[in-house]
Length: 113
Image 1 (cartoon, rainbow, N blue to C red):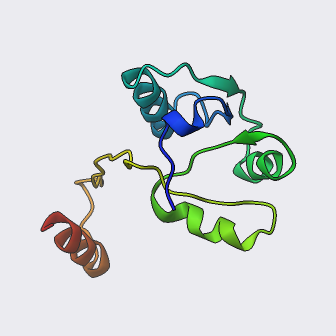
Image 2 (image 1 turned 45 degrees about the horizontal axis):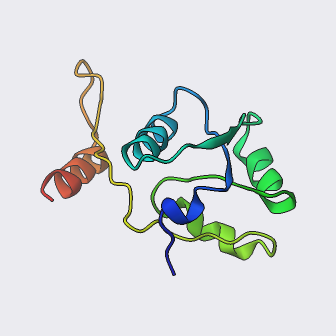
């Protein structure tokens, strides 16, 4: 059902874009656990990355529940990490412009949790 980074230590990882949050977070977590990460350069698009994973011997990472649609692909398997790698998210907007009702509702919904 779930895999740990230690179970994935021998796998080649297709990097996400080098300055992306997910890439920095994954590298940090590998380092924290003392695991040397075997990397492959990202091809430039997420579709190309998924195609490489589907046809090669490598893995990649995605944020949150974005992996769930991958299980529909017959060559791909998506499995959550155990323990999950957590992160915080926030909202940013131009303070010069008023927020619409939907944006305010979204901020109120997630800001109260």
